[in-house]
Image (cartoon, rainbow, N blue to C red; front, side, top):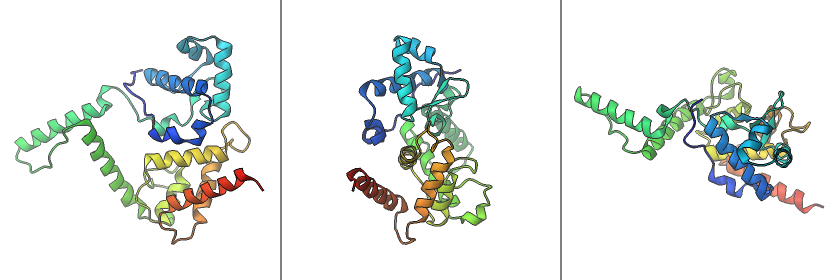
Length: 252
């Protein structure tokens, strides 16, 4: 497989309670394995592969990997291998250098100059990888906004809403936000925060978290319980969740 030049690591991780619950050792191992999976462009690995990459003895590595499985940062597959949790949700498809933002920007500039030479009146080309990403995000948000204005009934479970396809566990949440609240787009950081809450309430590897769709249905039901005049439904729900979490931790 083609090695990735980079993997995504969101800055919101620094303030995530789920991340803060890990030991320094567990954080270091998980981050190292994230880089290792990026190098291989493959989200699964065996315990022996992890031990070899980490240059550590198998029993010590197995102990940390088991802790990461229990905490929901790794998933154990049926064949005994491990997989980085939600890898395909957060890591973009990478088939080779042509998928790099810099390469996409270069192709965009070339297309612009070719079409300009033919007399077309076009927008200016992007001139950097950062601008290329901003343009793509803007296009994506526009497409998501158009989809978000449809009602849950009109989707009939057959088309993407807010960029989420029907067979994805997040789909009930996307339909609710795009339909009832007419929400235009959900950022990557907001989806990541939702994933953390779902993992907290329906931990992977437990009976309650056996089906990942259950956690997202819980989230959809919780959002649906908000008053329609709640304003920003995402902010309203997160504020309510944080208050309730604080009350639970404070005890009776």
